[in-house]
Length: 221
Image (cartoon, rainbow, N blue to C red; front, top):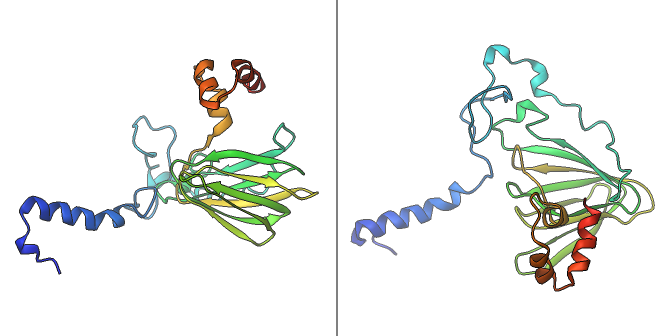
């Protein structure tokens, strides 16, 4: 057992900090300091989040969102569409540390490998048959084919994907422990950044000819 009184002051301080670290890192977003803080996109103040709308201007509509009712367009190269229910679309989420998305897939549609830098993700399959997988920092690929009613979890920041392996449309709902989880799509980030990542760097990174990189880049032009 550690005798705290025998520790030098600087060591005692470090020990206390280490004990507190787990509790400081439990959530992706800061804890709210009031019942609500409806975001105000017109505010001139810049903060890590969004300023609060004056309480006198808050209405009931700020706490309800019907954007997930409509099926998003999946008529694209990926056969995938998402409706985001984050703080930008749903003002009442501000400071509450959560958000939701609706994700739809055409047959064979894919939500390409991506990550969310500010949140872990949980989800439930509403319709269809979807392969869900993620890759750990050790390079281990965890995956499973899920059907309606089954749930999954993606740890924060890890690259993951969803793929409709069924013969009909698929729908899932996802939830995040952040009001604005962010998304980094691997292919778009590498091949469609602005300004562009030099071809020679990507060629070395993927160990392929520069012509292959240019071909891929052309797909994201």
